[in-house]
Length: 186
Image (cartoon, rainbow, N blue to C red; front, side, top):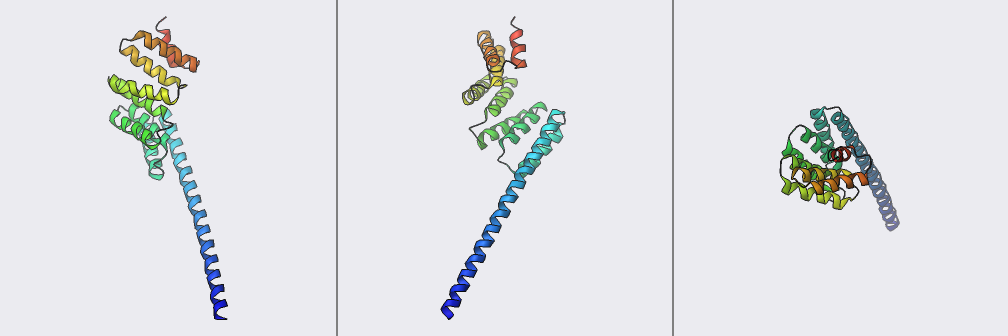
């Protein structure tokens, strides 16, 4: 009788343990889901502030989002844009670089944005590889062609610049920057 009672108790303990760990994992998944949603909402608020020119507020939103989830690549990229508009190039470069480190597979925007900062800093040696990498990752990323074309133009390489502006328009016929840049050669 003691053996049966002990067996039943073991089964009960096992059932309770299983139920508790299932309940626990559900809570964890829900918490993670809520956290990701909250981080995404903060990023969207940051993007809205960025569009409206409220750069400091945007940066605050991005900082809060990163406190919740520091693996969201788009947040680093967006915060980098806010820093670059403010002229805080070192912080922008750090964010674009972090974006690349967090997920090196889908970061053509981060490479192109970082290349643009290097270009604005007159550092073609660092800008050109970033534009090339952005195009390598996504050969249909028109803005990277446009940015590289602007770099070529700045360096006096007009033929390469024109080729890149044309390629940007081939990839995206609505790219206003490339159209304007190409128009300047007509």
